[in-house]
Image 1 (cartoon, rainbow, N blue to C red):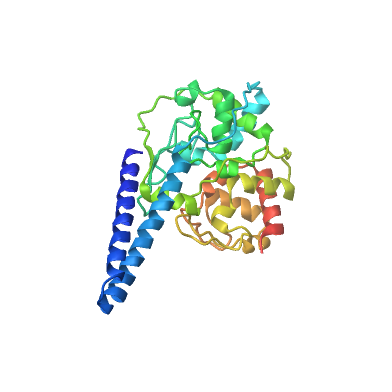
Image 2: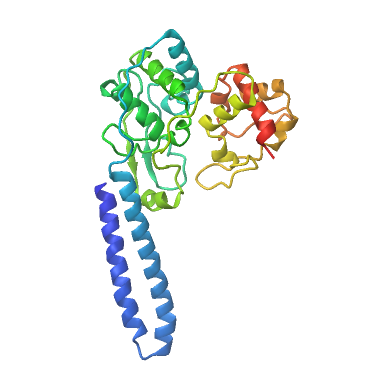
Length: 317
């Protein structure tokens, strides 16, 4: 935070300096100076001012308390809950919160390391009882999963709360029940979580996948079945549209990988789709991109994968 404050002060100073210089230039009696230099000084002053405003707004988002009040709950921790939570965690949480993509969720590596922009560091936490969640209540844990808000009321650096807000309360309960049941795993992974000033500038304009806390309750539970409705529920939770576009016609790219159109899925059989998600090889012999988390998705059972394909056949262009 301290370094970002210094950056903000620097851009405030540059903006102020630019305004003073601009006023001086436009008052010049020399026309080339007034119009030529005035244009460039004005342009850079506006740019510095814009960066200052965006950086300030981003810092408000990152550092001010946020989120809905914690709803205190206590999980029953039934066998059914734990198993359902384990299933969901294997194809959602494990991709980040595990070094090898497998359970238990003992912590992962910096998920920003491969982003070609200096926006910060985000090391997924150890979510076993040996990690920091051991001091969190079940309600605090549910809030950070669903909203990306830490127990202290501040933004969790990067958390998939944008999509986990679509988890039903029943599935949210199951995930927490599973996390409480995991074996404690001690690790030496160093927690490094910070956002740079560039990230602060990007936050207000939606260039980072961080949303405000949801203003709606968890959606109704959808029973696991081979139906398009269950497939829609799953695709929301795993956020397929993030890369493949809102209508699955292909993503726009940027910091987020540009996923291709999923229109071709309409021609695939269930067996072809399941095999692709399990092996990474399409029916046409082409390997999926490393940016596609097919290994995590492939951990879904056949019933869930068939439901996802049913929904894609309906929703894709």
